[in-house]
Image (cartoon, rainbow, N blue to C red; front, side):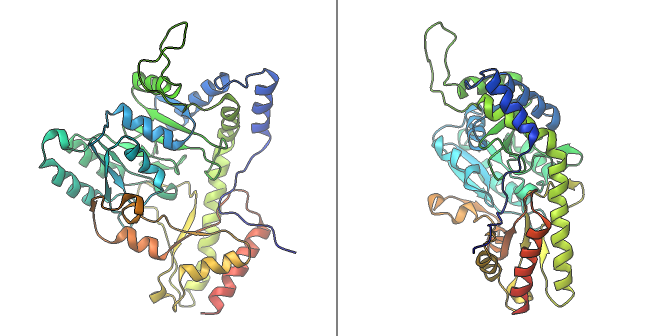
Length: 385
């Protein structure tokens, strides 16, 4: 009999979410917009410290709308962290703009402020109309990017920041919540995130008029008229009232989810410490001074030269053989076929991380028995090297 699958990061739902969804059904607020959407936006703004929030169908939609609001058009340039999921960069192409990718720095694995400055210097030599319209740093796996340095560089060159905090709800940098730094912040509530609305996202921002415009564009840009009239292209990007109900319930348990994810990380750290004491060298994504990560995913670096030939792929396959999901770190965007030929600034950090990095099961609903299976599979593969 096959064993139950242990997922990388599965949804974790409880009674609070059911209560809000039941309320939506009982009041017949099944239509797309309703009171849960408004309340969810309010709680997101209050929690993150961002003055305004628009609840949307995905984090990708939020990035797309942010670029539209910043005036990104065909032929424009947008600088984007290379080590990320493709959703960070795809909206650049939606607008017909050109992505320019930036390497990571070894500490946080996020956008390297020095490589960012190199890219901005190079583009600053071009006519003003050709200079970058936006910068998209990412808080990878919940670890905050070095936002103070990134924002200082961006401000000197006058380029706005779209802060991709899709993986970092609850993480903080210098005491400030991720998602509240850039001109726009992005959240994701996809099924694998630290909290979920099944599918969903949010756009955060300081300018109330711009967030209101995002809501307008996200509801098909319908003009204020008694009939259906549209003066510009709109999108079907709003979050539904039912899914917003799930989100309200999930926000109530978010502090506990963060605590559980961080406890998972410490459990892995203690386990691998035992192997490191026996001559191995398993490393983690480390919190730098001023950083607090929600530890959405716990990830390790497995350099075969320092681990008796053991590779991240050998570990992944050993876990897979026991029906345990693990996956390599994100493949950098500058290596992706869809972005072939896009400019890239930096060195080999992102590529090296991809070559030796592995994401481990990190869900807040992992049980003690799950960890016994995970550690058993890991002990077996380590014991063979």
